[in-house]
Length: 256
Image (cartoon, rainbow, N blue to C red; front, side):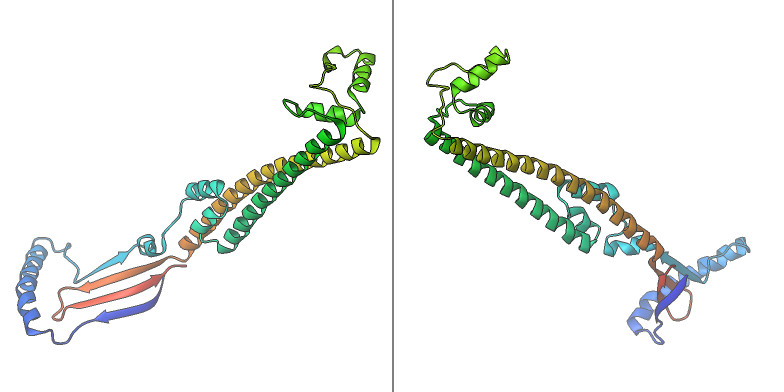
């Protein structure tokens, strides 16, 4: 224990009003002291009473020890929140920035995928005579691989996959006006699907970012509490109640 600060107050001549108020109380206290010492010589009240304010209580002004569970849940919900709680300001900026960047990336991929999807669907209407209503994603894969519905159905019959046949009606009919346009459509569709897949992958990365942030916040709280315990700060209050002059001493104590 190292005492690195001290202050005391022992007025040489207290004001008359204070003396008049304190004298009866101190006289009564001294009489009690004499009586107790006479009854039990080994037990007596000390002349000075010292009280040490615990470092943990003193540290409450700075927040005291922090909860690992709280930091974990906060950063699991919002990366950087737990770091703010643990006062890890550098990692707070890192995880907050990564969260914004990842959600921006997810929104960008989704937007790009939707734009391309709208483009290839409109392109299919213009160059293959497709009816878009009620069509599944599988339908657009099939029209990108075959020039018309008849070519597609013949291929399914050769493979003996009757369940995959489309009714040769206006609802499912398509016929590309050129091979180049069919390939252009297929390129748009593939790019749209690729952007959608990357958006899903970004969601997975966002989840990992939340988990990593939660674990790092827990570690930050652990280190914060270790520093708090290693560099404890407390106050030692000493009152000399039996002296002729009332004395008070306040000491700031640091533990290593």
